[in-house]
Image 1 (tube, rainbow, N blue to C red):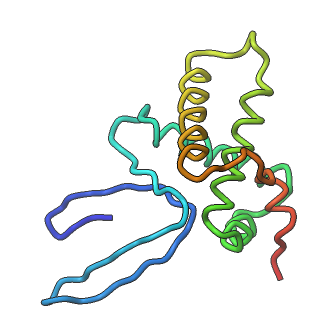
Image 2: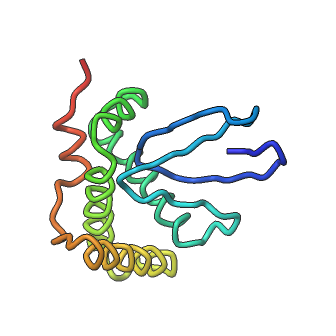
Length: 146
């Protein structure tokens, strides 16, 4: 998003609700979601940026595995509520990270897994999440387009 003053805000979302209204000639937008909204900063290795990049990679991977076109992938994603989609991404990222052989793990791996572990711990502490959720592939396979 860009304000009338030229300020830019970049974010990554799992979906939500956008409300708009005009007050005194200004357009006011409010986006809410049941899932976290990651603020993407100029620093490409910020925690939110790293997780958002990994989720985009995960979506591309699942698109290829399921043989979906891009519009079909996002149509299926849109049918899932934001918070369950977020949890499925966390579970899938964790499984994918655990599947990387130790010999192939590099510094980027440690950055991703540290941020992922921190995010999962926050979810468990604040929401009481037990760590169980369908994987992203399971969610996408269960949602089909008309």
